[in-house]
Image (spheres, each protein chain N blue to C red):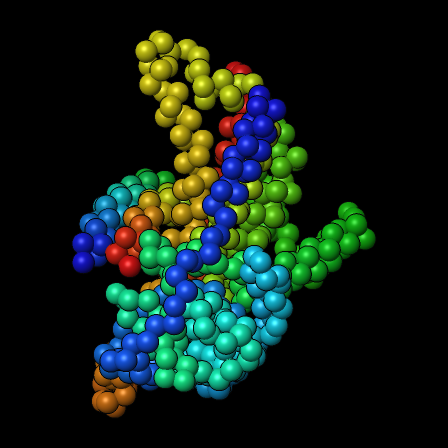
Length: 409
Length: 66
């Protein structure tokens, strides 16, 4: 059964190449004589749009904004962009000279930086060396974005609209392999946890049969909790094979959740990105189905012990459940964390709403008081949610694995 | 606009579900105060699962409503 599963997976994987990016056909420089003017793009100008700001802050960006005592630093990150037919472009996103809104003042090789994300200019006739652009037209929902250069408007590739930009996956004509804020944070978290766990492992070897001390002492309740509450009761007698996987899942999700709460590092939103949680759910899917024994597959496709008409109804439901269970894992973690981030951004946006974007100082001060209290409250809830969601992800993955290796009783 | 109405309806379900869980948990603690730690842990887990479903709906309403 494992062979059948792997063969099906191989064919499914190779069929995905049909979704490869295709070049947009239209290649005209648009000349909108009537309204091709640069709008001063200020997110905080009245009327303030909290939804747009919130969604903008949970998306991935090609620049890293660190805030330090009311001053913001934009750290440029490397961009690795592969255009089929033109090769791989590697350059620093500092070439775009980002201003304080995250828009680039310069365009390079037909790419612009729009609200922190690298986008490609769709219209032809746009010069491909480093040029200084005038700006961007004001972003409206009904029409695509335009970059203004020397009085002409050039259309930028738009984002797919079915995900409201929240997912961050766009159908573009280039492959974006850049080290973005999310990628950098993920690597940092992985290195940090690697260092911590290697130290603890060395401490366990050195201090065998002694009481734990220091970092090992701090991590030991977590390990015992995962082993005794999550792995052993749920997976059963063969739990030790899967302990590394479950512990990695738990600590990885916990670390990513917690680092998204730190506002000073530019609020890297990792588990609120559906691709990250999707990959973790894919790992769970692969592990459960590759260790499934005959009992597991039999329970899915031809459940024993019930009359045959019900078996015919049950088989499609169980087969769909095979995919729906990791899917719910992905969506649950994504929705919890990104809802928390959006709520936090909305509470901060309350300051702007009450102060009417800087026009009313009394309202602004009242807004600051209310917003601070609400943000503090929301931060505590988000801390709790970070731990709980990491635990839920781990225990549900463990229970799916436990179902897969259950022996016939 | 309908996306927001949908999210509001989803929150009704979450509220009812978590209210039930909380009520039963508190009753169980009243009957047997010495296992309140166990009961509290289970209550949090169930609440997270119920809330997960409601938040899935809210995530979908983001996708639909923009």
